[in-house]
Amino acid sequence: MKKKPPRLLFALWLSIAVHLGLILWWATYEGFIFAKPKDVNLNIIEVRLEDPIAKNSNDLNPILGSDKQPASLAAPSAPTSEEWAFASKYTLKNSKGYRHSFGQQVRSMMGAAVEGPDQGQVRFRIEIAPNGTLVKVETLWKTSDKAEQLARRAMKSMPALPPTPTGKSLIFERTISFTPFATDDAPVYRDDCLPDTPAFSNPFAWDGKSSQEIKKNKPAEKLSPEALAECLKQLPQDSIDGITAEAQRQLDIWSSGKLNQRK
Image 1 (cartoon, rainbow, N blue to C red):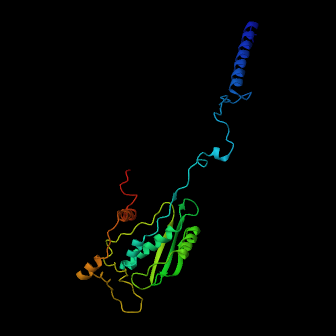
Image 2 (image 1 turned 90 degrees about the horizontal axis):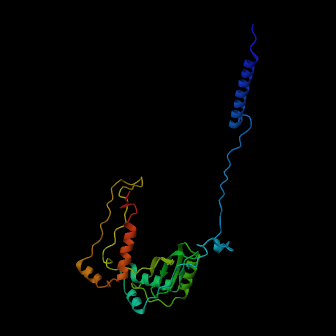
Image 3 (image 1 turned 180 degrees about the vertical axis):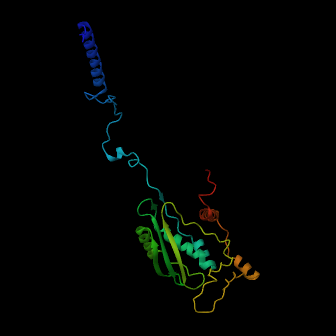
């Protein structure tokens, strides 16, 4: 076997050394031998305070610290002598005018309503004797203790009331609104001569014992022409405020937020 010349061996070893060097350099660069440090985000965000730091909670929250005053509503004026004179003679719809004037009198003595935890409503069942004396006051429900307190205080200190229109005890329920967003609207009298709609009863109800029969609801009673003419004499001319309030109540009852929505 012939030996390779020294120059050929030198060239061979040199080639091997160069290739090994390149391999080591590539491995080091790619992180196989020495861990390549991860990229570090050296971007620095500089924040400058244009205004001095707030010293109190009001400055930190401009909404809570604003000078906005809570909503308020002054108490309505008490019924006039003319309004009480009308109410004491109006017999239709369970003395409708008398009941309205009573609620207005109570609300006028409760003072201004201010937006906040004391606002709310209270509903009473009230009984007034034929001579106008307040006999009984029962709280049915309430959303404000303050409203109930002020309303009861007003009832105890209210001036003498006129006799009831029918000469009999007047028993009714009344809601007193003590909020800056609700007012005791004037009633509308134009439909008071129309007969009341009979109370609905299920014609198919059966007690399980008596004979089964379909009961027909009673039709509404109609006034004779003479009685209708006499009734119409009591009707006052409705105020613009009362008509507007009635239209708004009907709109609130029958309108729907789902109607006329554009998709």
